[in-house]
Image 1 (cartoon, rainbow, N blue to C red):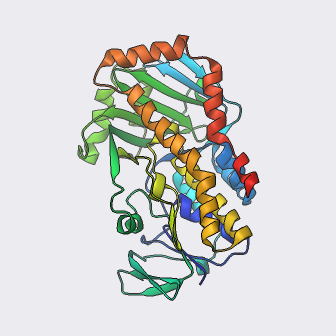
Image 2 (cartoon, rainbow, N blue to C red):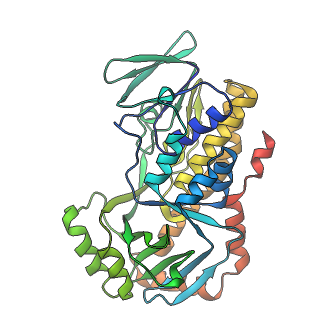
Image 3 (cartoon, one colour):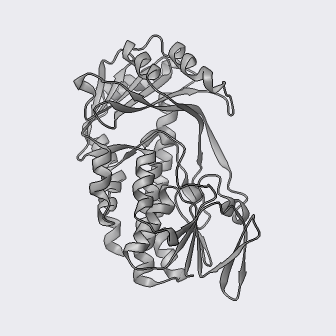
Length: 377
C-alpha cells in the first residue's frame, strides 16, 4: 500500500477521489461504521466547486444543492444592512448528500470502516499504523484527515491546542416554503448580540444556523433546543421562529479553531490536511472548502513529484498562506459580530452599512476563492 488516509470526512473523501482520478494507490480508514458526517448543511465556495469539477463530481453535487447568487447582511427584522458583493456563485448542500456523492465514487476496496486509529511508528522508512482492534497496516505515507481533534496531530504536536471562540452554534435544516426573497440568497441576520443565518438547499429545504456568546461545553437537553432558540430569537422576524419549528433535528456545537502556528504540516512521511492542522471557525463557511482545496493540491503535488519531502514542502508552501488568512479573518469576524459590549457590535454594523467600500469585500472574496496557486505545481 502506498498511501494510508485516516478519516472519511470531506477532506479525506475528496483526497481519495482526487488520488483515484490520478491513478494513485491509497486506502482510507474511517472509525465509524458508515461514511457519514454529523451536521446539517454546508456552503461550497466558487473555488471549492471548481475543484469538485476537476475531479468530475460537479454535476452530481449541483443536482443535489442550490446555487447561491447573493449574500445579504440584515437586521433582526430582515431589513437589509448591506448586500455583500461577490464575483461568483456558491452552493449550499446537505452534508449527508455531499458525503454520499464523495463516497459513492469509491469502491469498497478503497476504504475500510470501523477502523479506530490508535498509533503509528516508523519502520524501515515506512509507517506502521495500528488500530484499536490490534490490526496493523504498513504504508509509504500517512495522511491525517481526522479533524480538529486529530489523534495523529495530538501524538505528533501535543503543543497545538484548540482555541475556543467564546461562541456556540446551533445548526438545522428546515422543511418549509419560504418567500421568493430567500431563493438563491444567503441571509445573515444580526441583532441583540446574536446571529441567524439562512441558506437555501432547494425550494423547500433551508440550512440555518444560530450563534451566540456562551461558555464552553454549556448544553441544554436536545429536546429543549427548539424552545430555547425560539425564546432566544423571539424578537427577530416571525419567519425565524417558523424556520426553527420546522427543523426535525437541531445540533449544537461550540466554535473552536486552531490558532495559526509555526509547526510544519508534515514530518517525514506523515502529512496533515484540513482541520487536523488549520481548523477554522465557521464564520466564513470555509472549513470544508479549505479541506477540499488541501486535498486536491496535495494529490496534484504527489502526482507530479511523488511521495517525497519536497512534495510535502511544496504542498504546505502553496496552501499555508491562504489558510492562515482565512483562520484569522474568520476569528476576527466572530469577535466583530459578538461582544460583551453591545455598543461595539452596533458600531461595527454602522461601519459595515455606511463606510466599508465594496472593494474591501470583493478583495476578500477574491483572496478566499483564489486558485491561481495551483498554476505553480
